[in-house]
Length: 231
Image (tube, rainbow, N blue to C red; front, side, top):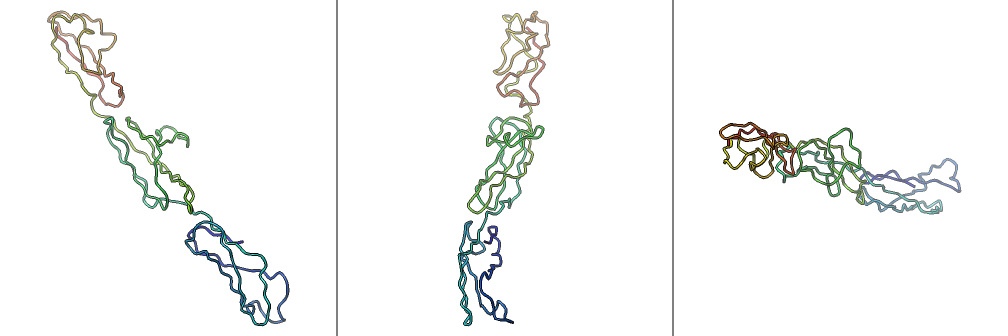
């Protein structure tokens, strides 16, 4: 039997004389044996018969059994390197990696870039939150190529500048608000728990800190603000 990898040239086909002998002084070339197969350079993976034929007029040549040329899958690879640009968090945008492979459908897998992620840490779920991530290419095995898992590349989802609906740094409130905790703030914001009960004296400015408590907290560079409140 002979083997080759998909896409390679066919190997030299050979035979063995198992019975009989040549006349003294003659070489095997007098047998005029030709071996052929239907397999070509780009034939699909599989087994292909090798057949023999002799054009010798002086020897009776019998071919016993049937030879086989086995074509095995080739290693897949990237024809366009994997890249993935950094971007800034907005709660919607997801990564846009780019790569091309010799064969098969290119898919992408993601993991957080923490320590040394294992294969099980990589999933098809696209990250949205701010952080440092890894992305790699995965291509399932095809008829003629083995499955491909590429090396990972790193990309960053940067934190946005300010949390949304940030309150103003100076607030004048009505006399009905007697404590800091009673003062209304925009959606997603609240005063620190330790200042909630701070009394507001009429005409006396009070400095307190409001913090962002929205569901996507942690994705902004600035998530707190110092506010001067005057009743």
